Length: 156
View: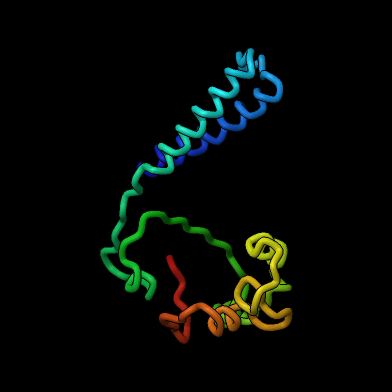
């Protein structure tokens, strides 16, 4: 059901975009000849988008916990898995992740500024000090560490 919902959401967005452009100037190469047809495509796009967004996501359950996250959240609806090979000992990589600052993450300040709607606000994960590790700020302000392993395991 997740694939169908995703297809409907993207199709709805595509219809909405094509309809919106056709309201400005009908896209005759798509057989949209009038602005009214463009408006109907916008409405249809919104309907298709909402149907796709409302479809239930199938719950998946972890049979055998592999990580602490599996213990805390054994049921989930969505998953992605990305890998990248890093030529360094895992202890060094783990330490680097814990010590990274917001200024070392490309576009971090820009994206969090957008998320904050341009408001400064108090210190938080969205507004960290420039030279402090971002995970330290997160744990001090709003995040809760549920578990930590001294030597992180690799997922195979």
